Amino acid sequence: MQMAAEGGGKENNEIKTQFTTREGVYKLLTHSEYSRPNRVPFNSQGSNPVKVSFVNVNDQSGNGDRICFNVGRELYFYIYKGVRKAADLSKPIDKRIYKGTQPTCHDFNHLTATAESVSLLVGFSAGQVQLIDPIKKETSKLFNEERLIDKSRVTCVKWVPGSESLFLVTHSSGNMYLYNMEHTCGTTAPHYLLLKQGENYSVHTCKSKSTRNPLLKWTVGEGALNEFSFSPDGKFLACVSQDGFLRVFNFDAVELHGTMKSYFGGLLCVCWSPDGKYIVTGGEDDLVTVWSFVDCRVIARGHGHKSWVSVVAFDHYTTSVEDADPMEFSGSDEDFQDQIHFGRDRANSSQSRLSKRNSTDSRPVQVTYRFGSVGQDTQLCLWDLTEDILFPHLPLSRTRTHTNVMNATSPPAGGDVAVGGGVGGGIETINPSTNGTNTPGNPPPTPLPRSNSLPHSAAMTANSKSSVMDNTIAAGVSKFATLSIHDRKERHHEKDHKWNHSMGHISSKSSDKLNMLTKTKTDPAKTLGTLLCPRMEDIPLLEPLICKKIAHERLTVLIFLEDCIVTACQEGFICTWARPGKVVSSLNRN
Image 1 (cartoon, rainbow, N blue to C red):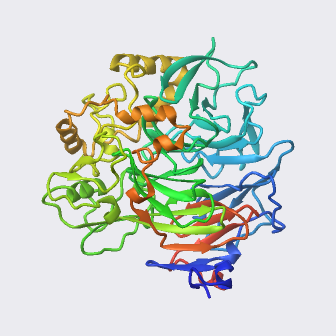
Image 2: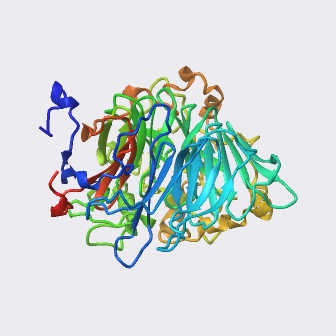
């Protein structure tokens, strides 16, 4: 029954309780379902999406996972027992019911979480952001309380990686704000000073005698900013907007790195691969789109959903980079803090392996990125991004032509040729280094001319950039420094340093012809067939490994954990799917 043919009549409408991939069988654990205590389906008409956040508080019992979820006007905080024990919904650690506004999103600070205290940010439909401690039952602070900063719905809120006090908030107004939890928001509407302006974005600082929130205001694109995600090293920020654009910024330098346009409609969700080399988006075109961070271009699209894609996420635990002789990949969070480790030779990273893949004396390497998506069609799709997509033409020489992305309608931007080693460059090639060549104020030569380099008029000199950051720091953003504490590892500096200099003939300020296209972004006909938005026939089309209906209502959550996959639907049911071999016998009676 569970493995009904995809096209098969009535059976296709049944809700699946298990599915099979090459790893084995994933099973729904009905006893591990979280919801409101009464387990009654929530009437979701006109309500904000159900969202889920996790944190581990490292308590002595070994059961340190905590879950937070919102359903309508309610917010719940439970011990999460996952695949181990049945959920006890009668004992939430904390429960809050709000009047006049609804929770829309939330995020834990993983850096400061303990068994006695956690910092949870909650965004609301009326624009406020609340900082609470659901263990101590304290409401620490309310930001934008009088809605003087922004009156529109909060769409996404996240702590800045590596920081105990900075957090970022996006709104349906299209604005994004950087806050410091230690500062107040003031009793009057903020006045702003322009800090940086680029193609369809601007950044302002708050003009004030004493430091106040927000520290920075970003205005990005047209329409709502729907979601954002920090790169694994915390240096870059990927934003998706209702105008259909993915924009990737260097967060420290406040500079645009690259853009992409959806096939049509708004982009709703975004995520990074564990090594920071690829970004996946989903949205109103029913597609998932894979974008290369290094090459700044679309490398594949995936079609499996029948409606809008609401969440995309990489599975860190199934993503693998292996020797040709297959080896079991088993990973933990630590493995992905810097890059993916694997197999016997743990001294070598995926970074160096992928670099070898592009060299003339390469050994065979098997590369698979696993990601998933859920949508308003109530379906879960799993996708594998494999080397036939990542490396469509094996490198016969040091210079190779990328896949058939370019066609006669594309402008001659020179963006279809990459030098061997480029794909392996990843985020490492732009990490700041001690010799000063790769600092945010002095960007390295880019692997390719970027399709969206800032025009020369908007670009600032290295000196003015550094002074901009100095001024910003003086204005109270000194904790930007925390972004880099865990990033400045010199693991592959030698290799990347050499590669950067070999690309020195490409100007980091190349003003690509596609730059002009972003000015006409409201006209899809101007971007279709360009690097911003290739035609469907010009890039590989992925098919999902599995595509299963798993809920009655639209799906709003997809999170990959070590032992399980967590999904949630708009009825307010949070489901746990045990990974193959992870079912605890007492919970195996579904």
